[in-house]
Image 1 (cartoon, rainbow, N blue to C red):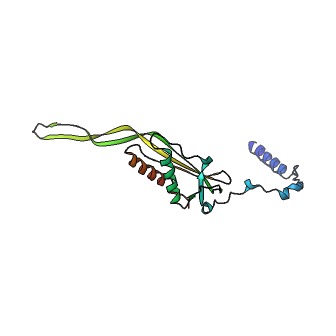
Image 2: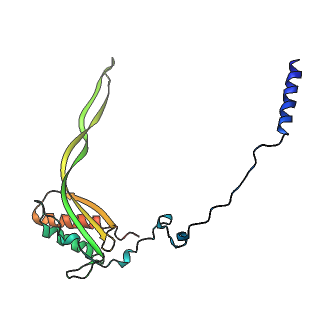
Image 3: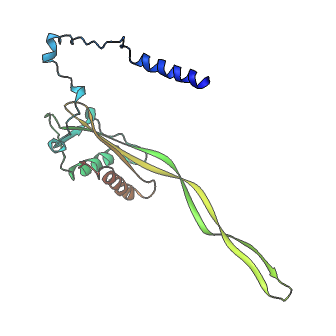
Length: 203
């Protein structure tokens, strides 16, 4: 009886599948485009063209201001180091009223870094003894000691902007140790700027 009921349900289901579908696909034509669509160009729909770094030949300070000085180095030192680093990359400073290709800003700041040093010749420990036959045994090992200390560093940051659009073109920073005489500091600033601009222009 149960088998006959199941067979009857299957037959009814198949009969229902053979019926006509009440849902009919319909399509309507798209409305006409507005008249101004032919003259409108959506730049956001396309990727920005690659930047041509080769057209940047000259530079000037942003807002005509030299980098601010600090107790570690004065403004003239930083300005000279930036100028030398840019000069090595084919960028020449403008000192007249002609428009420059790039606007440059730079600054120095002191920051604190946490350093860790591992000393592998630290605590020497272990255990040992003698067995009943008088033979020695044991295990000994060194336990490394990790020391953490603070160090002040000088961070040099350089920012380049397109003078025509104001858009940022390049931004990088590098750090150097906060120590040494005035001559050593000048060399440290120069080396930090070389690091910061080492990848300019990007390939």
